[in-house]
Image 1 (cartoon, rainbow, N blue to C red):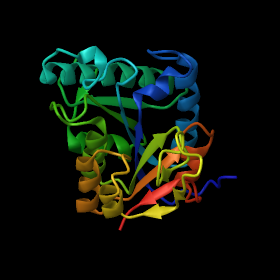
Image 2 (cartoon, helix red, strand yellow; image 1 turned 90 degrees about the vertical axis):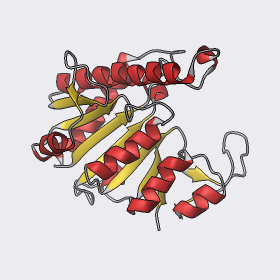
Image 3 (tube, helix red, strand yellow; image 1 turned 60 degrees about the vertical axis):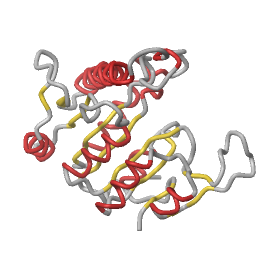
Image 4 (spheres, rainbow, N blue to C red; image 1 turned 90 degrees about the horizontal axis):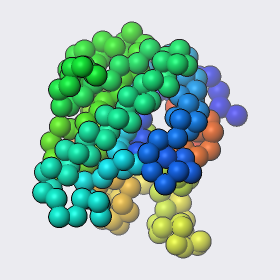
Amino acid sequence: MATDHPVFERVLLKLSGETFMGKLSGGIDPEVVSALAVEIKDVVAMGVQLGIVIGGGNIFRGMSDNARGMDRTTADYMGMLATVINSLALQSALEHAGVITRVQTAIEMRAVAEPFIQRRAMRHLEKGRVVIFAAGTGNPYFTTDTAAVLRAVEIKADIIMKATKVDGIYDFDPVKNPDAVMFARISYTDVLTKDLKVMDATAISLCRANGLPLSVFNLMKPGNIKRVICGENVGTIVGG
């Protein structure tokens, strides 16, 4: 059982867009998003300052079959807009659950969200508001993983937590290899040299350059967000 004593004060949570699909083939499953909002509410109630970055793969991914034949820059911008849709969906669910939330976008669209301003984001966090960072870095050719690490560094997060569908980082794909072994801890360098595909190389290198710990854990197990934040041995820690 998780305790109610967080070991991290400020956290950046990275969610994949695919998380929002649930059992659907695409789009957003409201029940999944609502359940996630409840878990996030529990964490915020402990006094944790929480930033979130969401991918857009459930709607559109720049490097996908759907983008075949498109200009890469155009496709990437479409993917960034997909992250805004997901961010607004999570904001709605969080506010329905009673959690004050702000969405900040790297591409200005003032009718639906604030522009990303680092000092304003910090102020929101200090006031106990959840801040969802949308539209990636605002630049093509960068993934939402890289955007998540960048925002984590900018808000001075204690840790970045990457939610996945498996328990942590394995030496081989556990879906394809039942004998795959999970690491409890692993260095940034080993993740890169072993090409473990946890995050893209740019994101991992940015973590290493800034000494930012990375937790990789299974979001499919209810309560895991809280367990990681409370310091339980859940998933894999990347650092050092």
